[in-house]
Amino acid sequence: MSGIFGVVSKKDCVQTLFYGTDYHSHLGTEYGGMAVLGEKLERHIRNISQSQFKSKFYEDYKHMEGNKGIGVISDSDEQPIYLNSKFGTFCLVTMGLIENKDELARRLMDEGTSFSEVAKGGTNAAELIAKLIIRGDSLIDGIEKMFDEIEGSCSLLLLNKDGIYAARDRYGYTPLVIGKRDDGWAVTSEVSAFPNLGYKTLNYVKPGEIVLINDNGPVTKRKNGATHQICTFLWIYTGFPASSYEGINVETARERSGRALAKRDKDIKVDVVSGVPDSGVAHAIGYAMESGKPYRRPLVKYTPGYGRSYTPPSQETRDRIAMMKLIPVKDIIDGNRIVICEDSIVRGTQLKNFTINKLWECGAKEIHVRPACPPLMFPCKFCLSTRSINELAARKAIKAIEGRDIGDISEYLDTGSAKYKKMVDWIMRDLDVTTLRYQTIDDMVKAIGLPKEKLCLYCWTGECPQAKKGAKAVKAPKAVAKKKLSPACI
Image (tube, rainbow, N blue to C red; front, side, top):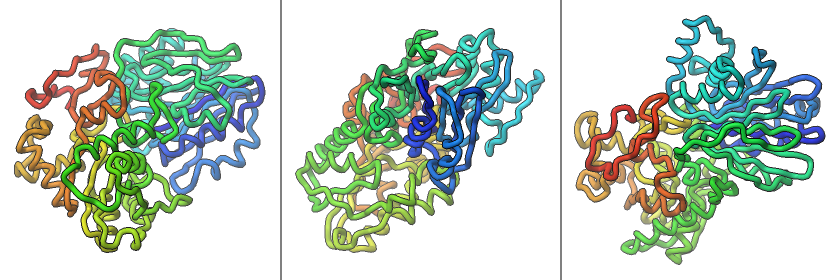
């Protein structure tokens, strides 16, 4: 998942843009970019895979001028995109995942469109979005038609002489929030960017809504759609603790999640409660509050030099970060029965090799792992998140149990079934832990506090509201465990 930030100010906006964009650094590790409109439209893009956004852009921002600007921390493609079009010159930043990116790119090329931006995975998704938008009769019409064309999700900020067009993806998988201070307005995907910059939250952009922000403030150009499916993983893992989505704070949702985990653990005795830094910490604090057991830090993250081990695209890079960033504290570990709260188990390799092994080596007596979400079953279709079925720990367990890949996994989705228990037991043995218990979907939803139908649960259930491009929302079946999933959503 990428992060985007935009500013419209009555004075120079560059410093605010610089810090506001930097507040999204937890969302991407590949590229950073800023574009500013003053007397001219100026943009800068830097590779941030080996260094922080601030260090790469510190010199750039001091030489940029303008009262309108957009920035991005990108998980994959180089952004912002600069385009001179029939609608004039503009810059564009995006977040999301275009599942049919290659298909759309081939079609546009067959029609005579050229692509110039470089991307590791083929076509630059942000450039594709820009080329789709300019096919419309206006920018607004182009954004709406782009929404019709893509499979997946795309929220964006488009900067031109009119101001900043902020468009949230049609189903609302990714967030956009508008803020205000005395000298202007800002729009962000992470509301945690606002407090230290002096902004107060004005409103949350609705799914499918298109807003123009200029010197007179925000004006809605297109109303929101009916379907609301914000990514649940924002609260469980990807979101910053100080952020709120749809008015619900991340940190408090994680604490409620931890409390729910503890309520199901009346049959085990532990000495220490801990969370895998950073996103597992609040889940663990909630667990400790509910259980009455002390929260301690047997594993400490070396904060200055290491970001998230989940976001880099390379497995080698992810493993290296996971190995180096967590330092064990033997005095806390030795001889203790430890509950480890984790946001999720995706592949399981980092948890096993670089967390659990360190605890055993330092003398842990028991290790009880408590993920804050159910087993991940499906690779994400809407953000750059879980990447393939075969790498998911739960899918590896199912294949080992069945002796082959199977299409219908409905029995493994039913937490009361024998096959679900077999799957969890297999993962527990593979991780080499004393016990393993996952959060339930109902408890996860309750911890967040939104109605279930407003949350995207695709990673766990395989249900989605868009069975194919341009289709209307598909109502999820009431009992997933008893029905085959739609092939369009698998």
